[in-house]
Amino acid sequence: MTEVTLAVVGGGLRGLTYARRAHATGAGRVVAVAEPDPARRAAFAAEFGIAPDRAHPGWKELAAAGRVADAAVIATHDRLHTDPAITLADLGYHILLEKPMATEEREAVLIADAASRNGIMLAVCHVLRYTPYTRMIRELLDEGRIGRLVSVQHLEPVGWWHQAHSFVRGHWRRQDTSAPMLLAKACHDVDWLVHLFGRPPARVSSFGSLSHFRPEERPATAADRCVDCPLEPSCPYSALRLYLGCLGDEDSEFWPLSAVTQGRTEEEVLRALRTGPYGRCVYACDNDVVDHQEVVMEFDDGATCSFTMSAFTPMEHRRTRLFGTHGYLDGDGHELRVVDFRTGAEEIIAVEGEAGPSAADGHGGGDEGLVDAFLAAVASGDPALLRSEAAESLMTHRVVWAAERARLTGTVVSLTP
Image (tube, rainbow, N blue to C red; front, side, top):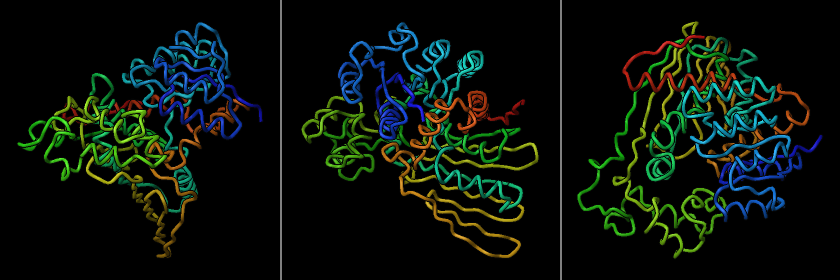
């Protein structure tokens, strides 16, 4: 297979994850990076042997050099996807674009239009489509093992500590600087559910709120920071317990600790918690995204789907129940239980691989599957190797925006084809 050359825009966790997979398989070679943080840029360039004149402080400098690679990975913050995606598409780069596609529908349309007019492949990083678990479910549905799909129950267990890390203290805590949580976190799940049904819903409703991580929930004796708080030892959201507990574990040091500090000693972690955002009390932050939300979808044939996203869970694989006219399927990310109504027989199908659900674990094999498929598609010129393209990703994002409108207005939102 032809080696695909890559330019990476954003040298943080996601950009690094995709670049390392491409490098490890030999299917891709990183030849340029755009990263504003000098230390991160230097470390990224050193790891992949990038020439100094190809290590840029921003995507504009990368674009000014013309097309220096076959494809670009865009892994910037949520609100910074649109301009580099359009500009690099216009230069002829194939694009691997971190989710969400954009934070506003108008901008997502511009990105999809840029991909279309330039004839390039654009894959949004909906990694759940690329897991062995998803592949197995789709095979069972396509084989008719449970008949016609009538309804689905789906849970995304965000995890109590993950909510505190990313959506209370972290980068995705506010809608005005990031996006609503349904878009920033759960566009994966809405995309995945639409993928299972094979079409978008006709109507959507939604309910949810920020119920717990608010000043009103703060205990009377709590301090503004965990390092000063008398309640810290008994608090489920203790920053000390979470981040000091990462030390010595390579995966946990990669994520979530790398978001807090590049230090790997107790002293360095405590310093970051005394001064940085990740040491704040979860009841004394400036967060406003929801901590739980329900989405209900109805499809054109009357089939229904209920989706729950909740912070108040362990962080583990999604759980899904699929109800069909001829059978029932229950999955937990590790195995699938299939019940055949015609015979009463039950079958347990183990899914290959033991990867966990978090970013440090590669999202259950989805990160690897996505990168492998993207590189193969670019190398062969065959977009059919991708499990979604720009127009389909735009469609599933529109379902997310419709659900959020439904939540905010208390209405049922109809979607036009």
